[in-house]
Image 1: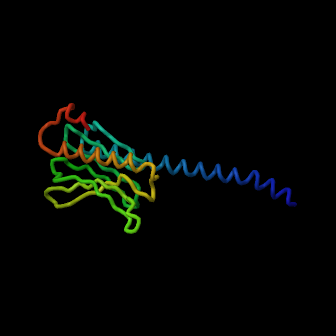
Image 2 (image 1 turned 45 degrees about the horizontal axis):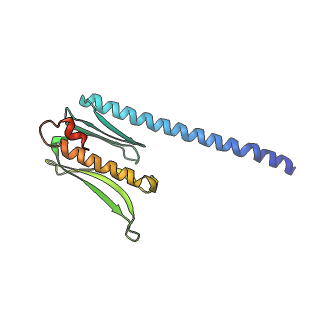
Image 3 (image 1 turned 120 degrees about the horizontal axis):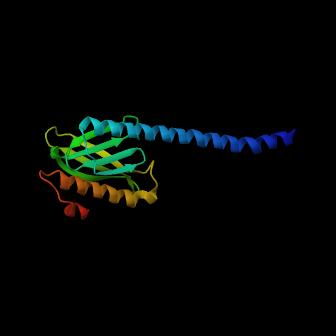
Length: 168
């Protein structure tokens, strides 16, 4: 009798692990499809010509230099964020670091965009210690700074030459 149990465990555990991995892969594909559909919908609705895009797990940030628009899509939380913001409406952009009270370790890094007219602000999370690895912190922090600089350059009226943007 114990031999049968051992054989069932030897065969059953890898099978359960395989089924679990297949389910995880299907969920990931479903979330990527949802993200792609949201992105396509925003691009079509606002007639955008995206020149630069950054995809981070279940998040997308993109910019349309010609129409001066910023696309923010975040499908990591229960309430999904899908925004197309006119860069001419942006008053300022800044990086916000949320730190742990005791350890003073960085818990989250946000790009905060404040609008002129509505006195609203939108946050886009680049790093969350509950979802991202600590080894990704320097890279994601640089990406946040890069996007802050890019938004600050394009929020002003007029065109920006590629040479000026190349410095980023």
